[in-house]
Image (cartoon, protein in one colour):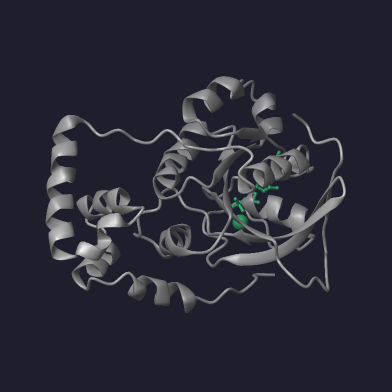
Length: 263
Ligand SMILES: Nc1nc2c(ncn2[C@@H]2O[C@H](COP(=O)(O)OP(=O)(O)O)[C@@H](O)[C@H]2O)c(=O)[nH]1
Ligand SMILES: [Mg+2]
């Protein structure tokens, strides 16, 4: 359903409170900064080379719907192909998604490179249910003759998908409208998760048993399963965190990361 009475107001100043926070996630070059600039009126550099955004950047906009208005903070996270912590970009993005404070993550998919986009999306689904998918570059896909069955993909992933053109702002109001419905709990999202083969499942269960015996406080952690998958991959930060029996070390690290706009 399209929003009849939605309006994005950029360049806002003198607001007294922030209602909701959006995190923008996606591969490099999928249009994250373009969408960020469209929404905020800021002019974060748009580049067509990877690693342009190496730190997280934040901005604000207002969203009016009927008589209501909401102030949104939006965070342009560094572009990544995965959220293991092998590169500084992956570390910033992963730590924010894992422990940062946000109401929804907009995962931007490149309609001309869907497979690569979905690899990342599935990883994000493991750490949070607070997600919506923005299918960007649909103009470019159309030019290339790429046809995507959005309805079918949406059904398979169990996450709403909104086609947009970040460059022109096409359908961005509907993206924010849908994101707001998810934030408010009017639409429930429960993404389809990765199901490991039985041999791997057995290993996961064994590790889970061992870890919860060593560090009982972690037993009810909402991302315990994700933590175990990262350990299996040899993720040094997560392993260290478990060894120290302390999630706080990672939280501190996030707090100390600078948030600087690259203008
Ligand atoms: N044709 C088209 N180009 C876009 C669209 N969104 C972004 N771009 C272009 O894609 C390139 C990468 O965009 P950018 O915002 O820097 O991507 P980021 O690395 O994800 O932040 C830039 O040249 C943009 O102008 C879109 O919807 N359509
Ligand atoms: Mg960027």
